[in-house]
Image 1: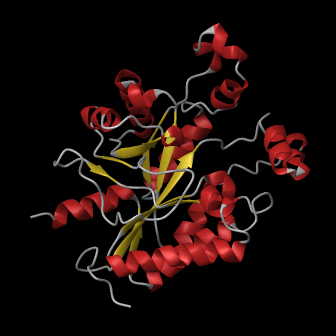
Image 2 (image 1 turned 60 degrees about the vertical axis):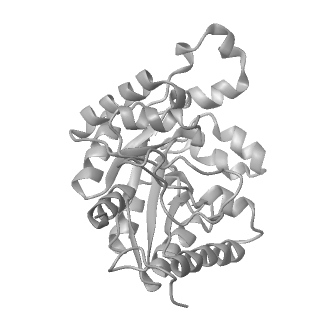
Image 3 (image 1 turned 30 degrees about the horizontal axis):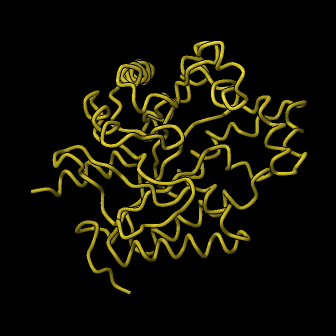
Length: 294
């Protein structure tokens, strides 16, 4: 079926690939996930040398094999001891603020620079409370840019937290060109929104989130069913000349604990290309949009 309109003169639609880098290391949160998912295998790597959530090289190799690039959004979360002592008693805060990585850790710095050197986009994953804290968000952007040695052009808020339009105003004022936070962790799909948003009628752009892997898998009964839904979204994107945005957290590429997630990701990219879609990171999509604007 031919698209009603095209993404641009060369492609029928666009698939923007994004990864939120939340937990590259498995820490003491593993027992929580093991209990929640009734799967004790989550605990095995805590007592071995395995690093099942460290998926940078594997995911880069997968995308390199498919000749695509993506965006990686890095988090600089506050630590628990930066909160008031009263907050230390909240179990949820232990999940939010502990067991995270340090953006200045040499191993993380090496990964950030390797991604940039390889043509991937490095972006900002605004910390949990930064959606309404311009000073904190600006600080996180500056730190990441110092690590990267280049300008950060966009990103996404942790947990998709937003206060609109204030969050977008913060993003624009600290120099970001786009935001990719607009969406839901409870549902997937276009909901009639096939294009980017321009909330201020200027150069600042919002990429709505079309599908997140955890939502897709939680709302479908099998890997085959998840693929059928993913394929349906791609076909809808092609039919409408849409800009589709997908979020795959790197740790879910670990097939031992999350079977099917890697397979669906690869098939999504292959199918998008077969349907005549452009595939890449939002920053590059942003540049294509800007170049096409009269």
